[in-house]
Each structure stands twice: as C-alpha cells, then as structure tokens.
Image (cartoon, rainbow, N blue to C red; front, side, top):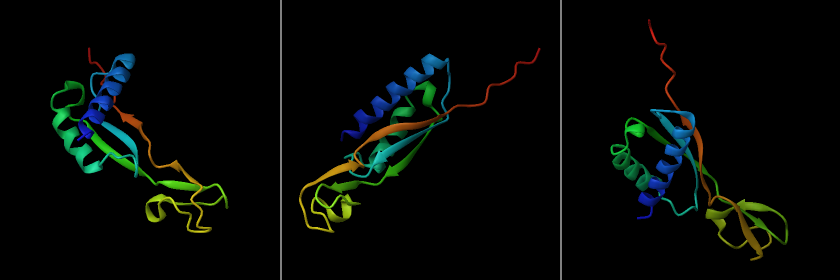
Length: 121
C-alpha cells in the first residue's frame, strides 16, 4: 500500500509550510487527486487517520480529497475524452495515437489554519 508513503509525503510538505509560516496547527488540507493516479482515496483517508494522530501539528486536521477527472487527447482527431470510460482507444476515430492530459496528478490545493487568537492583557 503506497498510500502510507503518499501520506508521509503530504505530512512532510505540510510541516515545511508550517515551519515557513510559523504555524502550530493545521485544521484542514485539500488534496486534488487524479482518478488514474494509482492512489486509492479510501486507503489514503485510512492512512491519514492513523498518521495524523502521531503528528501534533495535524492532530485535528481533516483531509479532503477533490477528484480530478482523467482526460485523454487523441493525436489524430484532436478531441479529448474520458480516459476511464474509453481507455487508450479514441471513441471518435478509433485511433490509438492518444495520450493522457490530466488525471494522474496529486497536489495540495488548500491548507486551512485556525484564526489567530487575540491576546488579552
């Protein structure tokens, strides 16, 4: 299950952002995940639940996953189509001269932190 390694990479990236911005807590992270990225969202959520308990910065951090549709481009007819539905063969011209243009990526889209608390004197 490589989702655990992916989780550790996300945590490393979040810790770096937290250090750069002097953050002590992150409430939510939104990940964009391609539907053919080989990362299974349910497994990623399970790994996240386990790993965040071991990192004080993320102890209460929610993980939200936004799917990115896989889209393939045909080099012959120049049309795009849904990769998962039609795979490598273009549904319009039946060409195999195709390539994936989106849907295999994963990136951090948003990081949500608590509002700063006013200090009372």
